[in-house]
Image: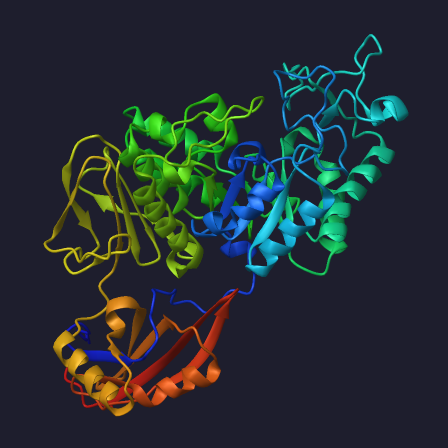
Length: 555
């Protein structure tokens, strides 16, 4: 027995005086880590003043990107001895427990943490455990904390293969020394307990011995009675088994660049399927189209990916994959600057297409952070008529299509009804059985849930608003809803509708809406739902469901 739902749902309306925005159809996740959207800040370059107060003043700008976690690149004093270039690398740390005086004071940092937490945002610090500056106090006070070469001299770092690096401005720490391990864990605990930060991004985490992380990660998580985020700058999935939440999707980024150079587009999805097949439970990848290393040593996205549209397409292709998204400061205005690590290059925020770019990146970050399809939706390959040119995948019921080529193309999709689906980035409804993607065009399509009689919905909402003076709003226009069909026996049908919408009020206001909500399925009885108030961080929204059953339905 088969039931056709689309013609069965006649109308769905919600009369409310409150504005609405799209919300996920998933119950709220209490863990902010799994819903994080990360914004990386290079303190030197972020603001005109190049300090912590400049970051605090810029929090409106950061939050407007849709990010809820700020990753501060190292804020510690930079080594002077053997320094590279005029300002040195922020990853040459002279004192793990201090703040770079060029960035401000302890009071400035505390004020930044308080300001972020007041907004419902989180702050993680960049941590550099593999090496220190040559003028760190440990060099003279604890030379046994360092690796020595065959001549008995403290050594520059070696990579994970044992090859000497060209990092001549830093000295390699020796994790064979238990005293060093205790000092490093104590230093990391210090920022968690003393300043209330929310976690760490760990620089070259794979250069540090595995058994240190087996010891350190549990100690850090036990240090504070709240969730913390631990991001390893490393691609090996073993880091998740040590307790890291996030690892770098370096291979994904590399595949993306090769696709932009002409490799088949479907190699992106094939690579991700293989990676996810062996991902440890709870592990996530950090998804990016650039970061401080790539912008400094490679090219910024607007250059690397062939202009504004290419940069946006690359961002969508990466950050809507399973994992958590990263935006690097300046990327949201598509700045062409390289932002060198050893100099100061204040970000030129007034880019010609900055406002349009900001709006685009905010939409994508918001989807990645709040929409259930991109928080926890199953990842699978989507079949198209252009697998060599279009990156195509499903996240839950959402379809992501990214044209990796600088030319337009018409594409057919197998297993997805394009006609009537809605683009979550532009809100436009697609018409016809094929999609046309402009050069480096993107679509994020939500599967059509039901056919809605908008005229009936509007007239009903207007009638409701006449009773109490409020303005009626069509739920289907600006809220997510889902349905489930449950045939029972041979002549019974159950339709369940789930809906959520933003409601900047309280539980009482939510309950008041119940009397103005009516849902009917064609041929079935009218019903009223039970509503509830949900909360995701600082966002409240009214949500509910209604189940309607009818017997005697013809097959």
